[in-house]
Length: 581
Image (cartoon, rainbow, N blue to C red; front, side, top):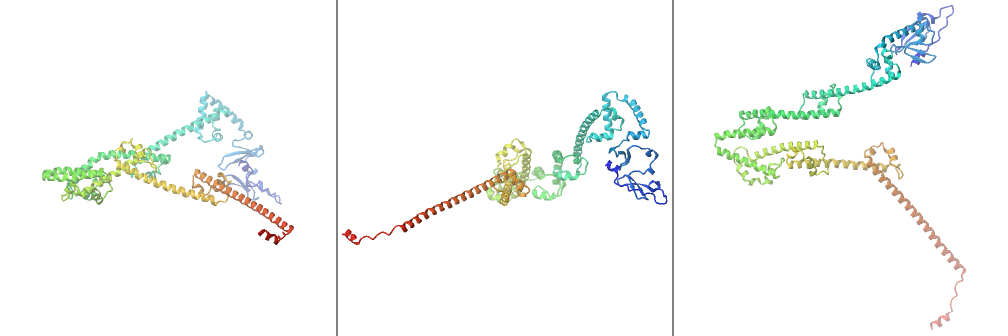
């Protein structure tokens, strides 16, 4: 582009000759020329009279110093205002003023003497090779040389610095530049690692300050909240997800510890509420207690199992008090009846007759509970009925089942266990039996969770198999429809021909090859059968022709003999009579 700039994209038009009458040449009139700046920042000159434009400065506008330039070098300016020099003879462009121009302008000898003085003054600064290399590296750093720059780019930035000459040869400079680049890259990597480490700490700290933080929070919601932070984009997506999950596990563990500490306080508060509430008494059903306190903050803070336990504890505590004021024997008798019925429910649950999803009517028929003494003793008794006790027991089982189900899934996820259609309960148990939390869960619950996972896995595999069959069918139909595929077609040729179709990509490579080989083999068998059939038909036609020729020959010879031989003579009638005699 320097060459193009020197030649000029704006062509100079021939200057008009001096007109008749002895008028001065407008090209040499300084007043006729005006200086302008092109859109790209370059200067050019325009003559109002001759309408000529020129990148070169007219002679009449040049200074005395510029007119003294007898060399081939010409001075220009780039779009950003930097001076450079171009020699149209040698086609060479340089940033630094050539020595010929320096001599003309009388500054060459002065610069040489100044350089010698500087060298003499600076020489003592770098007494050892290590000091020279250190000065050179310091220059690279001061000039802002980056590790991604090439030597040529760094050279333009540093060649005018006095420390550039601290190393005498170009080889030493390049070698030290390579050392600088290596060290800079290493330092940048360390800084990047440190930056990421701080970003991880900032990410965790921001999660602690997240207003929507809760144990069941999702990573997606946290990402939306933190995506505008500076540290967010410094961490990879997978690493952010892992950090979030680790933080959430720690948060959940801490929350459980805090909850255990607060549980005692809240249980005491809710017991006080039971005591003071006018609509709650010892004979109140648990279902009614839940309905009455559903808006109470303390009651809602407790889980269903904790609230039920607190109610039972309060009932038990107040039963003791009531025993003192009422007939101790009667109250104890009624409680024993309830306990006896609860014991029957527990026995039936352990025997498999009662599950968390059982209904009261189904339970009455299946367990024949109506004939149980514990059930009969409960009839007509004040307070909770057998049905009420059944509902409470079922609610406990349902809550316990949900907790156990979540624990089983968590244990399976911790060991990376995945259930498929071929999995067995024994295999499932064998992988998880080392987990103490898993063994604490009842076997029926463990088996039920496994069965549900197995059913889900079978459904997924059936869907996958259906899709695979459908895709294989489409692939075979594609081969059948494509006339270019024959018995001699190779798999690679078919891939080039059909590789951009969806039916081809829908099947994995191994299945494609297998189906293609079977299809081509079938084409070969069909082709071979057709050839054998054609050969058999040709042989049959040839045999028929031969037999036809053989039949024609005896017929012709017989006719000839009939024509040549005379008919036989009739026998004498007398001889016949003699023979009869």
